[in-house]
Image 1 (tube, one colour):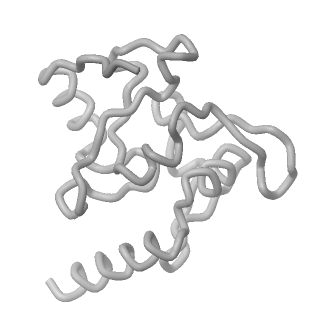
Image 2: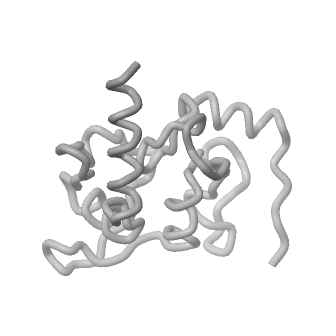
Length: 137
C-alpha cells in the first residue's frame, strides 16, 4: 500500500481547522505521546479524495482503530451505523464527556466510541492525567 502525499500547506490547514485536537476524541496534539496524524475520513480505497473536505486531524489511537472503516454496529441497537464524520457532523451533537468517559449520544457517536475504543483503560488513564495536569496549573 502506498502512502498518499499530503502537502505541508494542506496538513497545516487540517491541523488549524481542528484547533490542533483529534477530531474524534478531542485529545490535544501538544500533549499526546505520539504525533497526531492526518486521516482520510472516507478511505481512499472507498473512493475518498485527498483534499481538505475528506481529511481529519486524528490522534494515533483513533486513527489505528478506525483504519479504513466507514461504520460498524451500534452497541445499543445492533443496527449498522456509519461512524461520526467530522467533516459533515458536529462533535457536540454526537458525543458528550461524563467524568472521564466519552459517551455517544447518537448511533454514529456510540458506534464511534466503541470502534475507536475511546474509553479503553489507556484512554481513561490519559484523560485522568490530563485533567490532573490542567487542574494543577
